[in-house]
Image 1: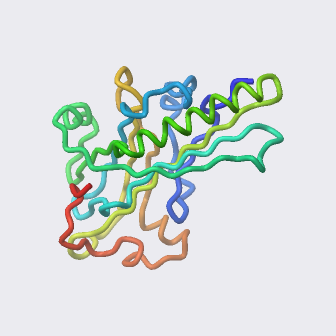
Image 2: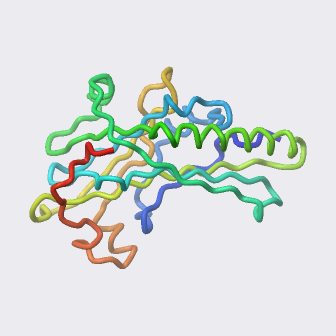
Image 3: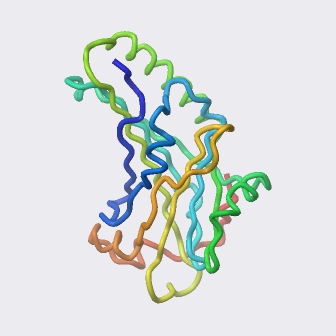
Length: 207
C-alpha cells in the first residue's frame, strides 16, 4: 500500500463554493507528493486577495489528515499555524501570479509547527509500515486563510486564489482557484461582514 501519497486535497473554512477548483496541472504536479518524506521547512503557501482585503493575523492554518481504507476510525488529523513570510525570494517567485487590484501574501510553517509536522511524519511512516498491502492510503490537506477588510467591501466578486510550493525544487502551484468569498459566505449562511470582518491595527506580519 502506498499510504500517504496524495490522493485527496480539499480546502474549507466554513465551506467553499462548488465553483472553486484545483487545476488539473496542479493535480498532475502533486500526484507523487509523499507527505511522510517531504521537508516541511520548505513548504510555502500563498494567497491572492483583492486590495481591500488581507489575511487575519493568526488565522492562516494548514490541516493534515490521513487514514487508510477500512481504518477511517483511526484517522489522524492535526492543524498547524502558518506565519507571514515577507522574503523577497517569495515575491519574485509569485510575480507571475500578480494581478492588478490584488495583493499576494506568502506564508510558511512556524518553527515549532515544522517540528510538529516532522513528528506527524514519523507516525505516518509507522502507519505505512503497518498497513503495507492492506489497502489504499489517503491524505487530505486543507489550507484555511481567513481575511479581513479595510473600509467597505468593494462591489462585485471577491476572488481568492491559494497557492502551494511543497519543496524548493517545485514552483508555486495553484492549489485552489476561483474562490468567490461572497459565495462562500452565502453557502456557509454567514453574513458577509461577519465572514470578512474589519481589520484591526494588528499587522498581518505579526507572528
